[in-house]
Image 1 (tube, rainbow, N blue to C red):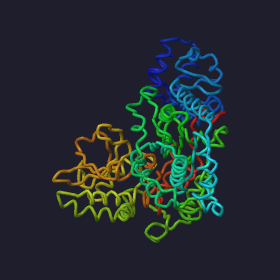
Image 2 (cartoon, rainbow, N blue to C red):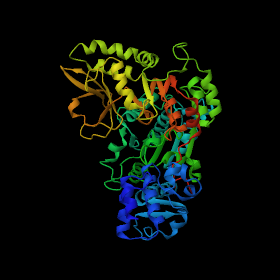
Image 3 (cartoon, helix red, strand yellow):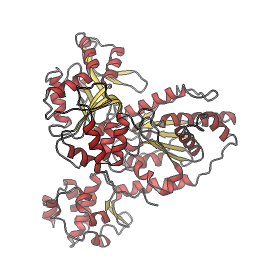
Image 4 (cartoon, one colour):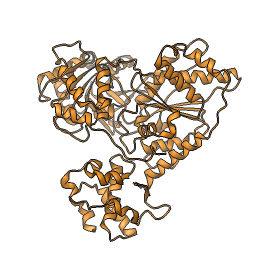
Length: 581
């Protein structure tokens, strides 16, 4: 048995999976090979984003559950689920594995789930005293609610949040989530003023720096449209990253979490928050503090383990605390992007393929909001022309600053805006249609040569850098500044910071980015690139997320209809216990 875990056998287990099993066997040996396999698969599933190993799913559909080929599954013993009840590593209170019903956990994700569930129970027990004028104030905040369903839902969300210490507001792009919380803040501040009480202490946060910046800006714009008598000062409201808000350094969960001194905590883009970070958040926010999560439950889940937002939205016990906004002000259901998003979300592969056949070919009808780019290789002229036209304003703006030695802050801000007017989004990292290949190719095709650092290089931070105050996902642009190449990043206050390239230890070029990395961002137009071969990574959630990054239009590059159909039919199914109870 030891040899099996040293070489991994035919199964695609990681070195960490095998090391975990070796550790367990060294502390408490077992002669039943199924025990070792169960422990290895629990570790393996956690590495794939699952909170636990779903034993029932494993028994009924091992290939789909593990994402393994038939050949790999031949190494797995039969009747694994039956051996779970005799596992030797789940017997003690602090054992490394936890068995609950048909779910086998590593201790860490189990503890994180329990932290969230216990916090929700405590919040449910909180009582909130409501002012008698609350209905009148809501009517004044939402005068259009009687004739507008979405405004009525926004009103309902504010009403729910005013009456409890936990609220989840979900909806697609442009459905007014930040507009809703702006009115909620206005409502709660007005109540405090009417009662002669201190204004509530407010904390705003998001998983990434760019998402935090967008939250701050969105609330700033929404305040300008508040009805008379509800305006408030937003100058002190500055969204932070979750890491910054919670003082997180590193990945160890459960240490150094301090209670936040706040009356209201609002977290945007909550679908991106993984299980560990969400547990930290629930630990840090006192039970009596209003915690409001905003997010799109249909987007991709976090890169790390867990699908917290999606599972909480399915939790029956939370139904009264969840409000789903349905009407998009960004694009209507019958518009190009809206129609694609709705059909993909519905999992209607046949309708999506029919819609694909009806798309105008890129270059033949440039005014259409959604077009199809028909190319066979990324070296085709049409592909390069599509990218060049998408970034025409940005490329034109780069020419004068490339010839001078001092790009001003205003010029850099403008170039960052023009960069965000278009983006190439890829489903995969590797392969001919992956980010790695396209970044290299586009750098040369757009005339930037092969140098590592050059004026015009767009980069994305790939790892949190607390010393530089840069978060994973932040985008910068390399430009000449005061005679030296520097990378311009937006700061949290709407200005710029110029950082020497030598100080950036973890950045990638970002002529193309993965759909995963695009979460929390929006662009004027996107070129959504699918590979020519199907992959388990291609899912309904990935397509929906990529499509809805665009505000104005999308160009779809889908070489094979079958790959697109498979992606629409395939869903992200992450195992976990937050949905139950």
